[in-house]
Length: 616
Image 1 (cartoon, rainbow, N blue to C red):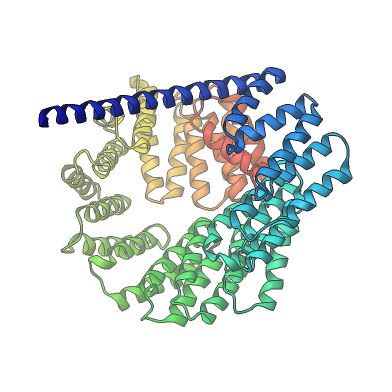
Image 2: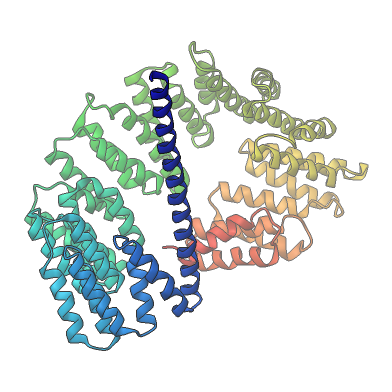
């Protein structure tokens, strides 16, 4: 009996398992068939075969009445077939079966719209809004249904009533902003998104990105600015609005106004200066040095030494003032001496150590290239190179600079020794390759063209694109002009002239270049001499002369390899120094059309589009 009982129990269990297995198979097959039908119905609908689509969608809908997608597709198919009576019957039945799905009244209204019965359509739409309940899901579904049918005013009414039902101010402000955008109502769109910020301040970044994309014209930002001023005047205690206003000013490059607002907010919120510091960085990055420097000064003077941004502000204000002078090319010796005193003040306050080595390098550059005090520059860098605890990279960078300054003083062997040390210590690293290139260039200056060529051949495969390109340019130049013994002397003189130019001995360099022109008319260095002279004129801030020299290259050496280079440099001077954007655009465009394979093509296209106003 016991064994039979066990056997009987096992058989019953096996029977149940078999039934379950077959039931699962049936369910899977049923789901697969439904999916196949849905795919086929979708294809019929997209191909305009609405009668075939209707048969399939009707079956799918009746087998799964809870599926809103099948309901929607079947309804739309009936509208396409103009089977309005069937659609009306279907809608009444669906609404009765699920009265809580108020979005189906929108479908009912669509049915009347198709029949040009505007009053009946509005009646259904208003009924949908009237029957709305205090459910966030229901509110959003109804509004989305209106948006889908482009009934934007009813979508707005839905969100307005939904806000009252949920009893949370501005709960649907973001969604309303999106609807107003679709409607094309920019002022109301801005108003809604600003309301959203009051309710959800953490959406600031999202809304800023939205404004940046949608308010692409001046009028849009002007409206945003106007509304922000109104809110700030009425609700001065809400910081999110002045924060947004600061952002608007930055978008419009109004950094002075942005700084004014940022200062007020910094004081009102009793902040630590972080907002002002970030604004300073942005302003400097956008070349607005006055506003950036003023922001750093605010931190230094108002926040004091206890501020976490004090030291960096002291450091970066020096870099900003230096860049303002150097990039602006408008300065006097008094300006340079004033900046020199500020560097001295910084080093007096923070000391001369590995922590301030970068500042010392910057000061040495000021002394060498602008105040022409090479002795002081080399003294400062010698101190940096000897510092303990300084990183290998920082030491290598200082040695390369120091080598340059020794070369400017004519101490060739000292310069070569420093370059060689960096080459050995930073082998295969970018700094090592840079030092190797400088040594090759030094050999070129001395007239040892063959040794220079050997080094340049190695550097052509440099990991640094800049070094590789420079090596290729110099290598090609040597090959082109040092092929015959008859050209050796002009090349020697030209290399010496370039060294004199590097040493800022401009008059001597020009005199030597002129002697080459007299010496031999067949040397082939004419375009190179014009380019070298234009560089000297540029360094002396004589931009008109620099342009005149560059213009002669395409006129006198049409087949030369420096024509596109000359055109680009002229365009750059017109754009950045002479403030003649039209002339610059003409030259950038000429490069694009006449020299499509030039290394300057990509940058020329970028600058041409910027000057034309693309994307602004």
